[in-house]
Amino acid sequence: MRGLRPLLCAAALALAWSPARAADTLVQFSTLDALIHGVYDGPFTFSQIGRYGDFGLGTFNGLDGEMVGLDGVFYRIGVDGTAHVVDGATRSPFAVVTFFHPAKTVPLHGIGSLAALEEVLDRETGSPNLFYAIRIRGAFAKVAARSVVRQQPPYQPLTMVVKGQAVFALDSIHGTLVGFRCPPYVRGINVPGYHLHFLSDDHRHGGHILDCAIADGVAEIETLDTFRMFLPRDAAFLDADLSAHDEEAVRKVEKMAAPWK
Ligand code: ZN
Image 1 (cartoon, protein in one colour):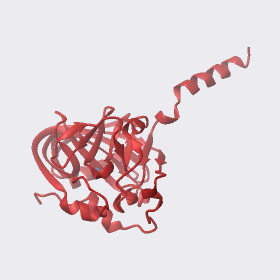
Image 2 (cartoon, rainbow, N blue to C red; image 1 turned 90 degrees about the horizontal axis):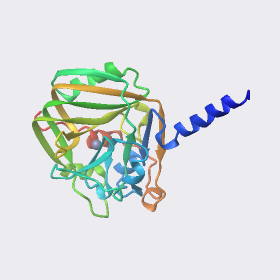
Image 3 (tube, helix red, strand yellow; image 1 turned 180 degrees about the horizontal axis):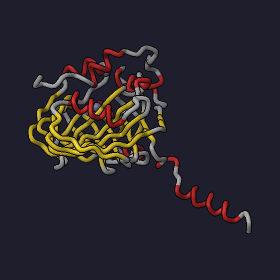
Image 4 (cartoon, rainbow, N blue to C red; image 1 turned 90 degrees about the vertical axis):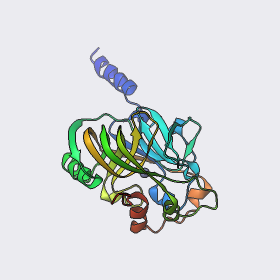
């Protein structure tokens, strides 16, 4: 009987642990540089992506809008700024997800800008060398969000596409920011620093965040110390020249200034 207890423990652990639901794990599909180089079609369905996270952000094949994943539901924010639930067969060329289990809660009051919010989050997250999942629910005084126009092949690089992006200024709106803080060393793979998408509480509006002001809210933070990446095996990805990384392109496509500045 002596060996029975460890065996039972091992069996219980095996049942509780599943590779798809590993804790504190950031899971991403394809790379940011592939997207910047115009690889806008990917093989990953939202049925697959949902097995690796209930929370996250990304985009859609054809670069057809901004994705927000919240509470296990994936939303597409189109170029008109409206949000719609995505079906499981829809595909993505780039997505970042996790199963969100926040370990830390931070109250937020009178945050005047995204830069001010990032200062608070820098303090609360600590070392830039880990990944963090961040959810911020609250009353937003202002949100500047963007989405992009669905593209047709042959695809232009993302720096060209964002010149035609639609920017929405939402005032006095309740909603949720969903996103991540990634370490500086993810250059080429993901966005170093903060990447946040917005979804209103009525699930009707949102987009990729360019700026925001928060009257009252709560930030919830989970530290992620495991990183997992799935890569496409289709021709668009295999044939893309990803040998060079353009730092300025990342700034242009992810961190453009807000319209009210
Ligand atoms: Zn985005």
